[in-house]
Structure formats: C-alpha cells, structure tokens
Length: 181
Ligand SMILES: C[S@@+](CC[C@H](N)C(=O)[O-])C[C@H]1O[C@@H](n2cnc3c(N)ncnc32)[C@H](O)[C@@H]1O
Image (tube, rainbow, N blue to C red; front, side):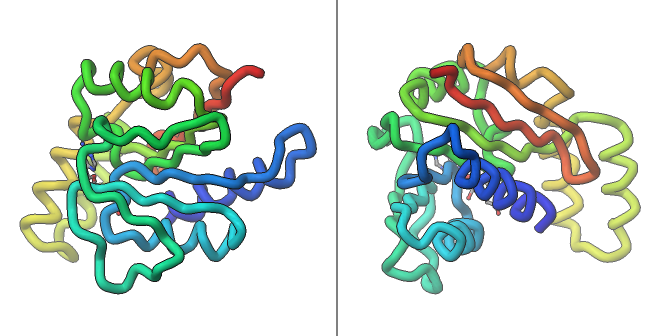
C-alpha cells in the first residue's frame, strides 16, 4: 500500500514536471494481482498501461489494461515513451538478469522501483507482524528482505547511467532513475 502510494506520487510528479513530456506509456514489471496497474490507469487514463507477469491476467483486471503473460526478459515493448514501474519485483532477479533488464529498458524514460530493504531493522519490523500473519507470509517476508537491497546498491546492479534518486523508508528502498536526455 505504502509502495503503491509512493509510486503513484512519483508518476504524478513526473507528469506535472514541465521539463518532462506527458506520460503516455507505463510498463509494470511483475504486476502480480494488478491492483497497482489499475490505479495507474485511473491516474493516467490516457496512457497505455501494460502489466507483465508470469501469471495469467487476474479476473478483476479491466480491458483498459494490457496484460502480458510471460517472462519480462522476453518482452520487447520498451521504447523511448515508456516509464517502467516495479513494485517488489527487482529482488526476484539474479545479477545477470538485472544486467539483461538494464539492456532492455535502456531506451525508456524512467524506472520507478520499490524494493525490500536488506537490513536488520526491516526484519525486526517483520517479526513484529508475526502474530498477525500466516506462516507463508512470515516465510516470504524474510526471504524477500534477505533478497532485497541496501541503500545505493541498485544503481550498481542496474547498468543504467541515468540520474538516480533513492531513499529508504519503512516501506523499503524507493528509487527513481531517469534517463539523462
Ligand atoms: C512479490 S510479487 C509482487 C507483485 C506485485 N508487484 C505486488 O507488489 O503486489 C512478484 C511478482 O513478479 C512476478 N515475476 C517473477 N519473475 C518474473 C519474470 N521473470 N517475469 C515476469 N514476472 C515475474 C511473479 O509472478 C510475481 O507476481
């Protein structure tokens, strides 16, 4: 939720920035249940929203969203009009795959990411939720944090010589990187 809000704020800021042309195309990597894609469509009704995931299109996703089922590394729709969004997805990729992804998205305008923060405090916060979540969530949460990132790490792992802006919050590592034009 907090990540969705942060991503939507970044998109709004980009679209209101006069030095940035309007957002016309957004590709979401690892869209999962698709709720963020749906919110992005509501925020940018004139933009093409493409949601990619290994899974089938969830039933509640409307026709306004283009759902691409498959490996994101096999997808070829990234172009100079594209803003790329990823929520809790990048930590699923190996270092080699991150390199491949960088190649794919290098023509794009911007990449907005929210990822787990690999830090003891994040785990400690996770442990506090244990009484309220089931065993699968407990397991996945700790695995995700262990696969997450430290501040500044993503810029080294993604081969994008762009402008980087990163911060850490309770929601994780939040990064926005824009192509230098
Ligand atoms: C932790 S979930 C996050 C889902 C969603 N972004 C969210 O925040 O609720 C990661 C998603 O990435 C998808 N995924 C993992 N590897 C992928 C790949 N190589 N290509 C496309 N989707 C992938 C998984 O199927 C899963 O839905």
